[in-house]
Length: 278
Image 1 (cartoon, rainbow, N blue to C red):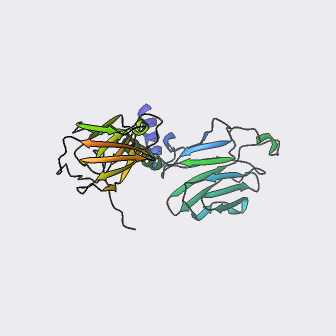
Image 2 (tube, one colour):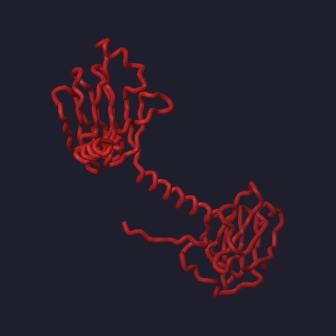
């Protein structure tokens, strides 16, 4: 007898008469601020439940950049449905009109159960503060979270590299400070075989920098700031720092005219400059 009942149950499961619980529609999770605002993570194979009632409108917010291209329901005359861009508005017109809704966008497909709870009072007022009723259902997408996480990690790594200290190759620098020029006197100077790094005391304004040519004329050099350093885009035998009447001479006492080439085009190890065509 027991084996007979067991065989009947198995047969009913195979035939689909008994539906396993794993196929139940997903009910969106309430927001922490207001239970009537629901949050749900997208899954193409999931069916999402929308609980509402005549007199109450529900807004379904899809992904950014999505546009609804097609909507179909099983009981269209009982429901008022409109879409604008990535937002769908759902409002039942009558009671006892549970149905489903299928949505196609330019990016994804969605399946919904549109459900109206039993309401003996026959008014929408009883549902206005009901946590099961949905005013807004907002979707999130695992792939978007992954992309954002990867981009955030990439930006953090780049920021860390840019903030990292350069690797000194030559500390042999000396200087000559003209009278009343201590405000632009460097507190540190070195090079990495490619670029020259100059550090000033905190709060000091940075002077203009010139390279002394072989004929003793001065030529302004390209520079930028990296963290607490002024970076001169070359190495040289002699530089002159000027600001108003203040003058400081900076001398590379171990000058190597060959230096070290900048293979990546930037001064930070692990960071590469790329030219992007317009």
